[in-house]
Length: 371
Image 1 (cartoon, helix red, strand yellow):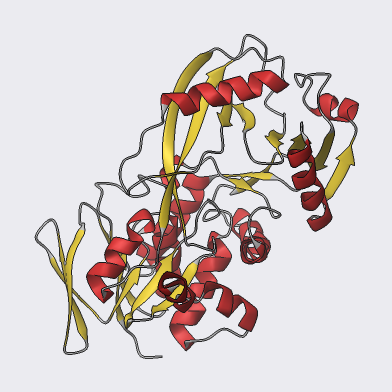
Image 2 (cartoon, rainbow, N blue to C red; image 1 turned 90 degrees about the horizontal axis):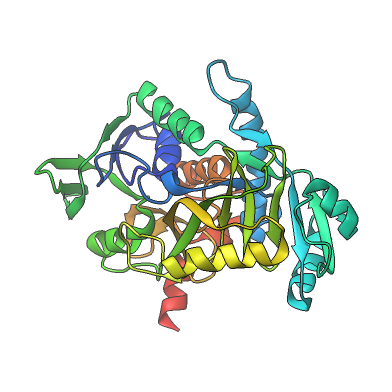
């Protein structure tokens, strides 16, 4: 394949992982609008590796990523990106019980437990009200910072450049080349632009190709709360199977989320106090933790395509704009495999897995918008 100049827009996990893969064969420059990398979604992620989480294509990519996570953990000087945690999924009403049954049916690593067995794993769960539960020993924590740093470091080792404080403000296709301009006054020439701009993915697509993908940025709230009771570091992540809350230990306190998905414009999102109060109420209702005091809270962006699958490949209106957006709430756990898939599509224009290719094809988003 002819060596090309590639301009990657976006310095989160999507941009650095695909940029790292492309730098094997191409001259890569990554531009990030903020003064540092991984400010919005990646830097605010409380990521877990949950192989049974998300739609079918996400589960496939997550499972494919596991081997790469294992390989990275064996590299000298690279912190292990995955550490054991375990996941305890609970049901407190009929809708949660139905969601849990579907989850257990789809995940051979999940084991159905009694309420008493669940309380062995997390003794602070209330003794009454739980109608079903299951444990997934395969659930693990992801060291997001270590994974992102690894990709950014290897991107530089392979000759790639990273420029921060450089928001894309213009891009023209002139004589088979991109002439791009950034907010700091710099100009960039590239053969291909890679749109890895996360919540700003539609803005970049409209700037370069005149049409977005129908992306929807959604706010997700995370809270660190204190409890008057001890929080053992070896508790599993505990979640409502219907995804209305989850919590896990974090530095002697508790990290918890109401699993909110409030549609918001791209930007520096802040937590809504109502969401913070809501998750404390929900977790207190099913535990004896007595959460009252919030140490800190924040919010991040999870950006979904209409069908919640990633959007990977040439833009339907402009083949020299390569789409790598729509990772939603799954971008960290499927990052290794998705970057490899993206690089294969970039290199060959096709995938050997036709089902996967159709599931992530950007053309499907244009069809959805037309209807």
